[in-house]
Length: 73
Image (cartoon, rainbow, N blue to C red; front, side, top):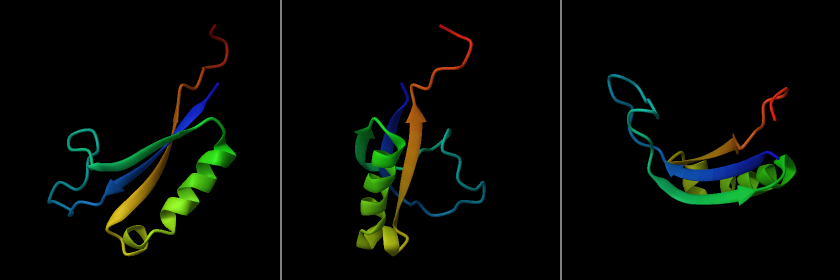
């Protein structure tokens, strides 16, 4: 079963190297789990309506986790 994480993060300023989440991840404000894509999209839409997201100071990310590869048990 694929689970989804909806993450609300702060947007940090762009550096000379750009933004690399693996080296320096953005600070998380809220993390919510969902069991279906539809539920994850509805939660993300609610987060996207927040003033800080609309102003560009925060961002919403939907991440699929726990996805099984086909052909493997």
